[in-house]
Each structure stands twice: as C-alpha cells, then as structure tokens.
Amino acid sequence: MFTGIVEETGRVISFNQEKAAWRLRIAARVALEGVALGDSIAINGCCLTVVQFDATQMEFDVLEETKRLTSISVLAAGSPVNLERSLRFDGKIGGHFVTGHIDGLGVIEVFEQRGADHFLRVRTQPGGGRHIVHKGSIAIDGISLTVAEVEGDSFAVWLIPHTVAFTNLHTKRAGDPVNLEFDLLGKYVEKLLAHPQPRNA
Image 1: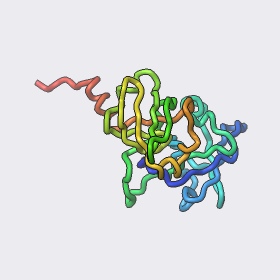
Image 2: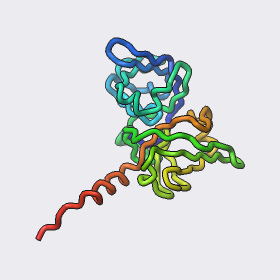
Image 3: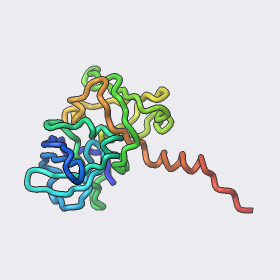
Image 4: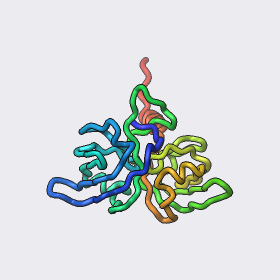
C-alpha cells in the first residue's frame, strides 16, 4: 500500500530481457534507505518487488503482463521514474490509499503551464471515466492528485510547480502514456452496487 506521495525521482540504468524475466535496474538514493529483499516499491505507480540491490541501485523482475499493460514498457536507460516506498504504519498519509496495481494506461492530451501552475489533461482507455469524480483522487504515474475536471473519458488536474519539478512529469509531453490507478474506494463501491446482495426476509 502507498500514498501517492513521490519520495524521489530515480533513473533507469537498464531494462533488458534476461533468461528468467525482464530485469529493471534503477539508480536511487532515498528509496534505498532501509530497503530489504522482497520490499515493494512503486515505480511510476506500479508496485514491483526488490529482487536485488546495492548501495546505489535496485533491481526488479517485471512480468510480461506488467510490461504489456503499463507504461513500464517504454522505459529505457536514462528514463526518470517516480519512486515511493510502501506505507509504514507509523508514517503519514499525505495523499490517498494507492495499491500500486495499475488500472490502465492514459494518454496526455494537454500539458501546459498556466500562470505559476500547470494544467494536465489525460484521456483514459474507453470507459475509464466512470471511475473518476470531480474533486476525487487519482494516481498518475504514482502521484496522488485531485481531479479538477471530468468530461467523458478525459479528466484534468492542476499541478503546483513543486510536483512538476520533483517528479518525472517535467519530462512529459502531449501524446505520452501514463499509468493510472483509480480511487480504490470508488472501485469497491462500483462493485457492490453492480452486484447487490439479496435482502434477508
């Protein structure tokens, strides 16, 4: 479980297909503090397991399904990635509950500076808009953000300068893919409403 508050921007060292699996190597600093084998780290919002590490880097095995369904597929050496360690019970929840399980890819439609802030509009995959509510929460590449506008399968958020500078968003352009995780509570509500239990007599 994560909060969507990015701790640092790491950098991809390599992402190669090896004998057993795709292997992703990432240079990091903050995310390495206290790390252990088997720990969960959110990489652009996607929960991956640490399989090897040293003082300067972490390594992860990536499933074919994960590569196919997320923007991890476009990572290459030098790519900046958002990193967050999993939530500690004695930690702060500054964003919202984020599982690190990506619901789908979005595509940036508009990303521009407006005054001191930045405006970001993203189109989800068909039908994704039903999971998004005005003033609700959404995770974009693992960043907890508040929805400012919703229109069909497109939604918009506003970003403060710190978020743009501190995350990988400063490298993004219109047409780029981003990982989306919809609000967990909303997904549960949808499931419960779609399959109501019969009332006891």
